[in-house]
Image (cartoon, rainbow, N blue to C red; front, side):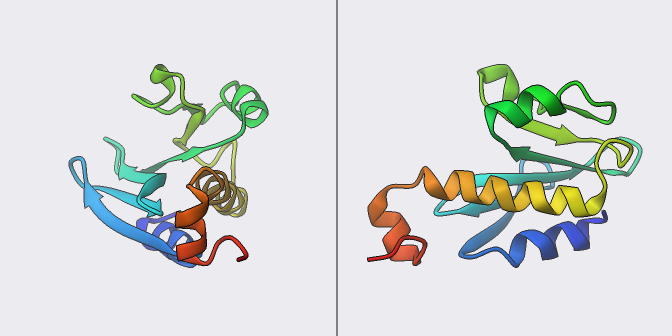
Length: 121
């Protein structure tokens, strides 16, 4: 996945915002909370970090090409970073990005979810 595809996948999810911060990382948020981080690795490939469930974290962290996301996982957060396509193709990554969005959105306050149209009235 290239940065343009990554941004298109994240941008297609409901009520997202995009900012470039932290040294050029493409950070996607819902309700002001981060759900995906894409940045270029030293070799020019795109490394993508996303939030996941505890079960997914336990399974994915053992796969080649995936690792606990730097900084986030070391603080006890369940975030995985895809470093290469060997363990996860682009379609699977897009599914995990959508799930990350859902997990983060579900953790927003009811008021914010309603304001964003993510929670029925």
